Length: 389
Picture 1: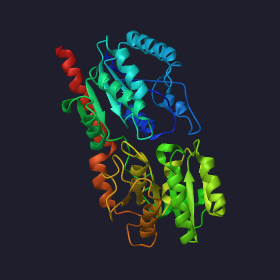
Picture 2 (picture 1 turned 120 degrees about the vertical axis):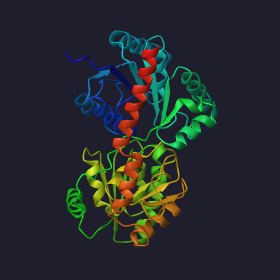
Picture 3 (picture 1 turned 180 degrees about the vertical axis):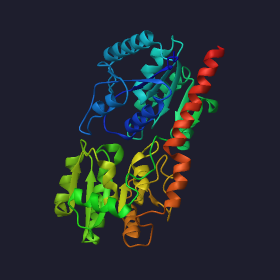
Picture 4 (picture 1 turned 30 degrees about the vertical axis):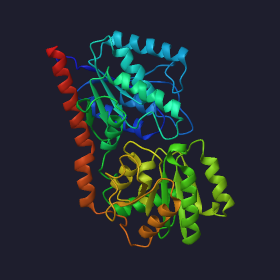
């Protein structure tokens, strides 16, 4: 009789279409050959789109109705109780949490169980957009919950260094394991993938295309994106922009570009299940975020052989190297972002398709095979100490 696989719970606050969620689902899919993987999530979705159906096709999914992003003491206590019941019911060997709220409640719920507790920091819950009091509360909560944790997985050295700077855990608690991203292009034939992507978007073969993929939320700084596009499109009058995604600030960007007289040259593609297959249509991808953990969009664009102009935020410097995969600019600096995009479009920087040797090097350092192996090694090490205990 084949012995039962150890049960692993992955817990996340919400299954919106976002980098952390997609990375977690890829990891769950890779782990299920070795473990009985279950996923628990709160019910919230949003204009960014939902991954609940996709998640349920990967591993068994349980929706915890009380687990929500906003702080609500009554609901948070109920969510803690629901998570504790799930843990006590199936007795997982490992509880692996993602996102700030699920990380706090999930680790608290597992405290009195035998489960090893792992938390992945895709990006810290305290952000530059928070008020000082709110930031202080989240930092203190992370310090407390780090004491209940067997391993903190930081998706980049920048994320780990921020945690240590804030005195969250100690160096021995951290593992640096990148986001789960496949660096193999969806289609090995770049010209074919480019033709298909441009046809899907209604673009001409010789169009000059500036792309963006993401959520229209403050973190992604769509206002700087709009300013940069104004500069690019008003200077390169045959260029077009394609913006893939949705979110609460989308209408602000639409209004600004319409007021600038550029609406006819900007395509808002909305939510697309085939988003990754569209990268090949671009000549350059812009990624003007204000903060990150390790930007998945950058990784996917490079994997699809498209150069990137990104802001110098956490995790970006490991991926975007000047003249090889693109350029970095200062956060909020639309002029610098536009100038670096001009370099790419004018042929003075890397052009698509990017050098395969450069992509292969990044795949060895950050690709899905390494990420899965590092997680398996971490789990095995934790369970070995559990057996000794």
